Image (cartoon, rainbow, N blue to C red; front, side):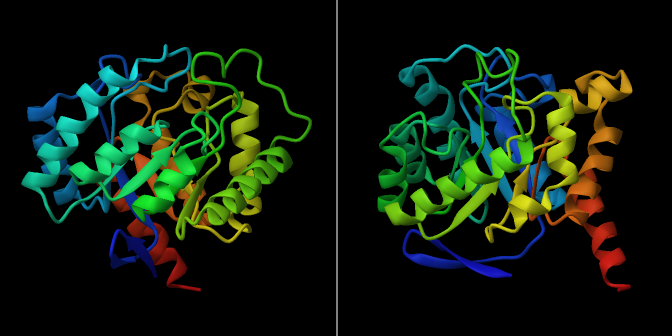
Length: 276
């Protein structure tokens, strides 16, 4: 358990934890996660009841091949949803999934408490100083390319070494900018082949060794479906299996579409650790 600075407060963060995904987009790869404001209230209630510690809300799809939406459209999708959820569930810890500093600032003003940036500050040079000024925790993810281009022949000499080095550099940059609390995400599926993803999962300890909490987003992704010949809709069992492996290798946060099953996974791995 650690303490995070959230604006002018210190909040306890007990690991491992589960982050539920809500997409305010029409084109997220997992159809049930696409919601509107009214749906977001219902989904948030269920996720909190199922044991979610955080709820991640985004207004721009980052699936492979996704086209970038303009700032006004992202704002229209995400900010009213965050405001509504924060008003209905003031005890909930909300995260804004964005790479734009302006959207991050609006989301924090609307009730969010964390910023989840798929680019680790690379797509908007104002992001790191903005988050530092906002005084909230920051999730920095590794990505090769952009969502539109990232799965076009991604290549690495050593994916684990290169991702770890990149995250180390972004961690240093975030701290240098004045961000106190940083979470690292190796970016499964973001500019990586299935082989790259499994190499990262197998050697996740390299990222964990950087000393920051590590979040993994494995939920219903292609790395499961390519191995099992399933679809995203059929990938819950595979997701749970990989989440268990990630926890055993040191992951602190599971970012998932299916909160109940992820919380069960956390409890089972905790029971295993209790026997050591």
